[in-house]
Length: 192
Image 1 (cartoon, rainbow, N blue to C red):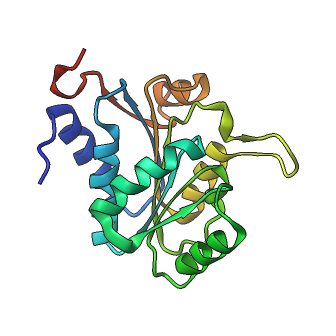
Image 2: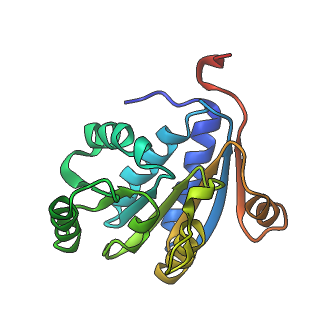
């Protein structure tokens, strides 16, 4: 088992409590670079799976997806599906059907993965929620982060908005009580 920092433990505990409530909540996980947000996401996904729920993880760029997918698959096995436009039509088809058949309970992808056919959605993670690549510029226009929040609300899921530099909107919502707020201000092993 991985040893978590105090801030990681505190964040994970609070998010697991939200997950167990079986009701919608959105939380800004404001963590500096290298504070260990990914480890918190993994622990939370494991808990969601134990509770019989599925999880969706949105990444801002295709380039980030393979590394994250390797890390997630090493920990979660074949429960992980990947969805992004860099896949061939056949690969996307196969992954979509794995999700639809419930062979995969965790989906990692870019903004269009928000539409993955996950059932019993319990957790949505939007990593680097401030990134402008979540905005779809062509028709149909949508914002992946905002769509993820709506999808989480409809499913009664926990939505974690992770960022080292959150968007003004998200930060404002976390400060006025619309979203929860968790901070991780220390890098793992006090790295410079």
